[in-house]
Length: 464
Image (cartoon, rainbow, N blue to C red):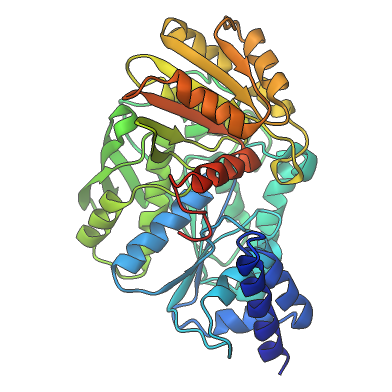
């Protein structure tokens, strides 16, 4: 009875929010449902014959979840997916509710859920996922999570709540992620990169995983792929990068056009893959998605075809056409993710037109000090190609100051806090036929997309 009432009230609320154009109703209906019936999410999940896949970690959750969902849907597996990025319990519940009828009947086969790290322990108790993926750990939202150890503790607590034998896919190139395998009784598998063409002998970026998660000694690296991801071992104990069950090799990055690589398993079977998303970090996302989908018995060739057809998740290397210009919008929210986006953007040939947007709303993390750990100095390597630079958001002046300290000439910059005005100016500064590259943090990305939706260039993200 409580379940039925929770579903009815939540769906009524969601419909009202959308009819009144107050937003997408991506979280509040779930919050209502959980208050009426605290077991609502568990009951919804129980109705899925194939159970749930949960993706957590700092970066890559949204893209990995979207990729898994797209490939499963392509293979006629009906999916519940929190594709709006609402990854706390209310948002996850709302995603389930969106797939039910008024009577609470759910006709989907499985759920693909990206989970906020702090929400992961409660989520594991509520839905007991069949498969868990942990992508990576980097410093993120310091005012909310504090130091990285606290973030890792959330995931460890969630894993501890899972039944023995649950399948867990870990990024084997991240020593902090691999340290989670200390939780006993789970069925661990590892993915990573194995390509001698990539990586450096020294760490050139902000890195968190310098120390062994078992004994605390400083790790020795044979190769860094980026940040603290790479091939490592501890000189003081037996901890080392584990043998990989699935890895990417023969990687060819094609700038903003995407990448090509081969996905190989431990038995030697290799499958060539084309991927439209650029950057080495997206190769990791493809690997993570491959692990989960293959576990769902999708044949490798169909899996490769699904990855090749995937374009992007909203706001994550999202490609748009705006007034005759190509636009790429790439969410950045922490130093490592931002470094990788800049590195990928710099592969674009010709003149560069950039719009950097920074808000400090609660959902972003009100502490924006992370921008001082980003290697914006690498933009100096393309200073002669930097044709226009626009700053926006509630902390636009902080962003401009950071780039001034990075040594960039700000003669061409515009500091325009209002997102709509800044977007219009940045588009105007980008000649027709050229490309505008946008790096927003979370709420500024939502704001920019909303503006673009009002102008008819995209759908609102909850409508896609």
